[in-house]
Image (cartoon, rainbow, N blue to C red; front, side, top):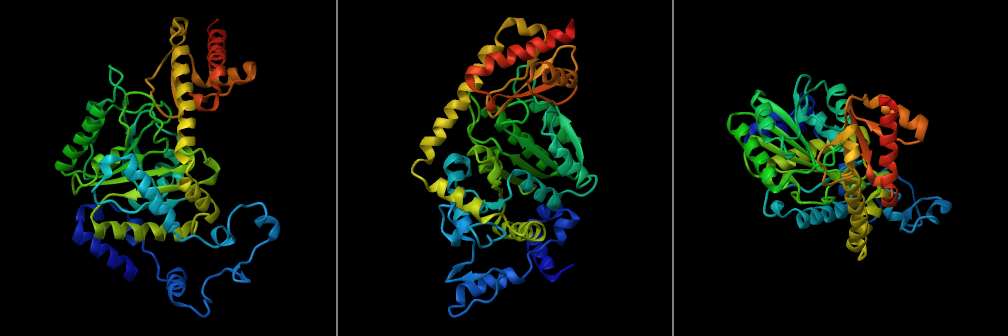
Length: 426
């Protein structure tokens, strides 16, 4: 094992041996090398005459570039062409943390690290899987979950998924099922909570969120080491009476056996999907935070090296814009209008013959639970006969993204889905 990894591990073991034990074999071996990037950073601070360290080209005092590219971009060459640091632009990290603290009151005055920039949410999940999942480790999540978790945690890292029902009989979060699933785990578990949930569009109430935290603390008190991932991809799109902040803040500083990890990003929150900017934020004691940041930087350096500077510059300037909050509220109201319209349409009693729907109150999606119809069969029929695209989440469930349908078209969308169902029942 590299001496730098040994040094990080020793610091983490002294500060919190439980979190060190949560690391995968790969995670324990990871470190951030004192190579070209660290030497270049030192040179950037001190080399006032010539800086001949980093692998870019300079011309006339700025990064060399093609004019036909620069002319189409409204940014300075220095902000788009050089490499970003593996951990991301420092200005962007600070601005995103400022945003997090403003939107999540429970994060205030907690021991929380500076967000680390990732190449969007999936990259963040993949980093965490590398850091914490060994073959055979269990990922605890709800029965309705994003299918890409299988690739990230099972296929790539050999983990096992243990699910529990998302909803209780009253349509709230099934706290008891969650608690029972945690009680079945031994030594260590990775818990993944995704709110607003993909595919159902559900976020728990404040009371249920507090009960989730209590269940996790109870499991930790019983000796279970917990890496708790908060996939906050659709954060902020809360349309009804739900918790309005991430559970991450509620979990921070609660128990030495709990490592909360917030994974969020600008992609879906700020409608910039293709820019691929996300963040990982840890909550732990300072020495552990430093160790986790160094190991995370090591993974990034060893895979993508760093995220795109242009995307980070665009997001930073957007967050700094005086129009940011105004435009975000405008888009929120459009999204909320589509969700409300969807519920109004689904209130039609005729639909009860062919489907029920899972509770939804947030995010981009909702799910229909089909009565005696195969979801994949319906999906193909809707495509072939009506030109309507939906997602078959499993044998019984159809995911509908109301986010990408104009409010005025939502009624027609569900009428066509209904017509497709009646075709197959005849």
